Structures are given as structure tokens and as C-alpha cells.
Image 1 (cartoon, rainbow, N blue to C red):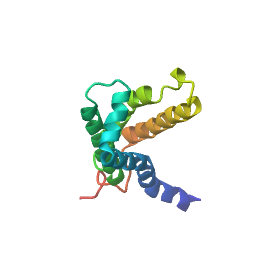
Image 2 (cartoon, helix red, strand yellow):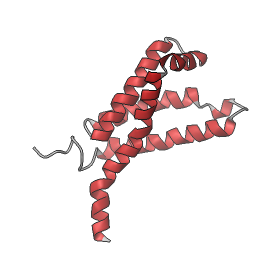
Image 3 (cartoon, rainbow, N blue to C red):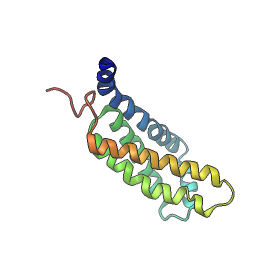
Length: 137
């Protein structure tokens, strides 16, 4: 049991960072590949400067996600993603304001809250032992 605990302490934070970051890296690439569609979706929510908002979302998702995976400046990356998720969750998943798709929006809203919890862990405890932040000089 002790060996298992040690393995989880060593490899768990890396696996956790990869799992947290995966959705953002994939989403960022998809937004980049379908930039005009992303801009249109953002504009459909009535947000100003949808091109700028799309570029910002891509930057946070791709850069933040990649930084989390490698564990470099992981606390800052997690903070940026956490802050990004606040308006994203409220604007794009307002389950309280829809009738069609209410269950899906509720699931998406709750998923984002769960991801925010993961980001809080990275913000509080850092990237863990297998990371650029904790490399031995």
C-alpha cells in the first residue's frame, strides 16, 4: 500500500494536470481551426469584439493548457484558466435561463465548476514533482 501511495504522490499530479489540460488544448485547437464559427458563436451571445474574445479564449486554452501539461508556471496557468471559466460558465451555460437543452447546459455548468475545483488544487499546491516548476537544478 505504501508503494501505491508513493506512486500516486509522484505520478498523480502529472496525470491530473494532463487530464485537466486535455479539454482546453483540444478546445483551443478546435476554436483555432474553426475560428469563424467560434467568432459567430461568441457574437450570438451578444458579446462585444467577438474576434478579440475568440483570440483570447484560444490563447488561454492553448497556452494555459500546454503550461499545465508541462508544469511550467502551473499556478499562473491554473489561475488564468480559473478566471476564464467564471464568465465562460455564466455566459455560455446559463441552465437557469433555458428550457430547451436545460439538462445539457446544467451538465456543462457543473463540469466547469468541477474543472475550477481542479484548478484551485493546482493554484494551492503547484504542479507536483514531475514538472518544469519542480525540476532539480
